[in-house]
Amino acid sequence: MAKHKLVKVLFAAFIMSILVMSGCGTKKESETSGSKGNGEKPYEITMAYIASSNIEDVENVQEEINKITREKINANVTLLPISGGAWTQQTNLMLTGTEKLDLIVSSSFYNYGSQAVKGQLLPLDELLESHGKGILKEMPEHMINATKIDGEIYGIPSVRDWASDHGFIMRKDLVDKYNIDLSKVKTIEDMGEIFKIIKDNEPGVDPIVNTGDLLSTVETYIYPHFDRLGDNIGVLEMKEDNWKVENLYEHPIYKDAVNLAREWYKADYIIKDAATSDEVGYNIVKSGKGFGYFTNMKPGLETQETIRSGREMVAVRVTAPYQFTTSATSFMMSLAKNSENPEKAMDFMNLLYTDADIMNLLTLGIEGKHYELNEEEFAVQLEEGSKYVFNQWLIGNNFLTHIWEGNDKDYWEELSVFNESAEISPAFGFSFNATPVKTEIAATANVLEQYRKGLETGTLDPEKALPEFNKKLKAAGSDKILEEKQKQLDEWRKNQ
Image 1 (cartoon, helix red, strand yellow):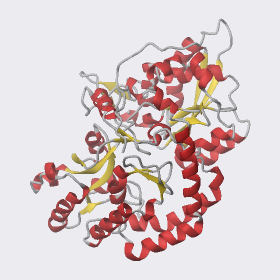
Image 2 (cartoon, rainbow, N blue to C red; image 1 turned 120 degrees about the horizontal axis):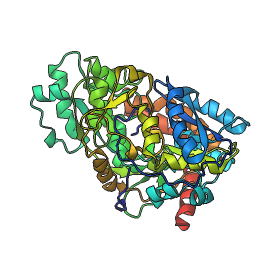
Image 3 (cartoon, helix red, strand yellow; image 1 turned 45 degrees about the horizontal axis):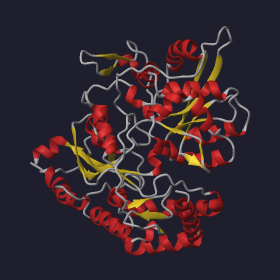
Image 4 (cartoon, rainbow, N blue to C red; image 1 turned 30 degrees about the vertical axis):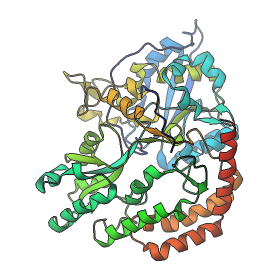
């Protein structure tokens, strides 16, 4: 595997549906080309974003933001939160129709590539030079370049934890109770002895409470070995000078991973309804029925999960941190084709990366109403402030925001060092265009739904289910997907 070091960045999971419990209070002067209007009527900007939490009180926050934007760029902003469940359908209608829309959160998980190719998003290269100089100053070039589709930039990544390592987070009271020495844990297999202690001594407490196939035992096992190249059908094993696209589910490493999951499931380490439950791990821990769960990690995760689970948590990390193309493309801000004034929309996007006041309003709400700063300048949520919660990792420069109480004062510096330490995939910057094989992608998705959860939670026996799984993947067209992905990867390499 190519082992390049990241340039130092000013950035902040993952994960895909959680509230990052952190922020920073450093204020910076915004750099924008927008004028104050000279008597012109303010332009009305509409910004759509994913909301998976409480979205009450948006209008009050919006008005505070507009006091700033009217002064700085002669514009008002309408915040348009859309629930995660309705996001794909509603934004597709907006992007294919003529509805008012200027800025939109884009993502490789939500058809970013096809949106760009279909002309639903506007290219940003020239607008960045004319109206986004603050963005260019704050963002490393390689991160912006990773968003390119057919040579043009269509999205700007949010500044967040761009690296991720994987491990297990668990109840500290039980670790202390049984004098468990976490320093001895070097690999995921080493966790087995800890799970046995909990199973043998804590009736009613499941050692592993991951559910579904996301962030499972198997995900943690295979994480350091592969670049998924956008999805799991066709992966690149990260070893020296390897550019062969392979089927993940036929790889010996995947077989080892599902065998381990099966072993732990049969030993009653993994919660029995892991394949069918929708309950999240931290809620099971909160109820007293769970010990811990595998997850992707970053500095400050223990504080975040302690708050979420209501129990003091401690973590052990079993992989190094890595960066893949999705580190950049998982959550971005893009300009919609419907924008009547792309220059003004870019002015506001620029403020999202340079203006601390706007970012603190977006991510924390109104000071004195939704949160307050304590004597040490940490943000503390007010009880009545629960009416406003924002997924701050989705948008803009999170390193401008106040740090939540419970984190270190140097949290953003720690996260910057963490990002800097990450291994970069040799295929960083490659984005797979699935359009030529969309029929096969849809067919294999049905097979993945049928088998993956069962295999990766240990519920299904790999000896029987894994060969069936791969046979059905081939029948659904997985080989054609591998061939197309290899072709695109080879093309991409020629142009590097």
